[in-house]
Length: 272
Image (cartoon, rainbow, N blue to C red; front, side, top):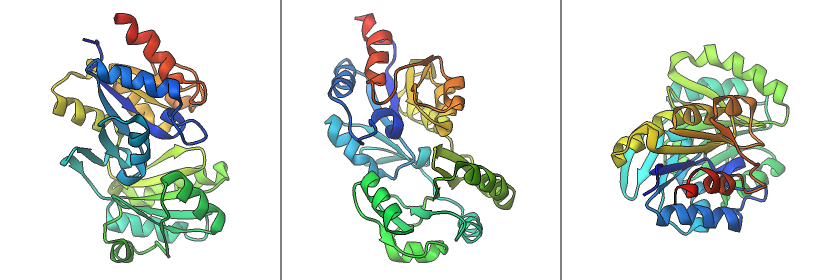
């Protein structure tokens, strides 16, 4: 039996290559770990349905930790289910409307988006299904149109300096009603307060009956840093942010160079 009993895998920039696919070497390495008794946890800012392409490519049963860990599901069992505070969502959406390229409401199984065609097409390609095009400033209207309460507000723009400035402006406005964090170079998110992937790691480990020292986590961005630091062995991708790398026990190759497979071969399979 391997020392590490559960592997937590961020998707975008980590498990997926830039072509939004899992390479054959990485897929086979993860399957090998699973055959050795390791549980696989997909942990992402995506909503649950938007994570299913990754699960389908792996061809394995997984635990889903969606919305950066706000929604955690093992089979039909919810281990955690949180939605963003509606007032915080409304404050942020009203303030950001017209200042950024795209505002996106992520629900559990679908998304609603306010953007031009290019950003709509980009988000559809990432999530694997088209969202509902609408003004997303009113969370109650989002719920009426999608049938689901929004879990988070995703803010996208190609101007990183502007996003960093807006993050600092939004934080005092939402206060302790929401968490504001970046999950990629062109975004930041308004999440349920206190949401962090490190919490999801603890919840899943407790569910599986394993200590944190028996977990391994892979990530590439600021929102992965807490999880990477909390894991028994935390690994950042070479293409990752400086915050993610600083939290890691090891920096592996990039998502386009089979970084996950390389790390598993070095630190997991060498126990065989």
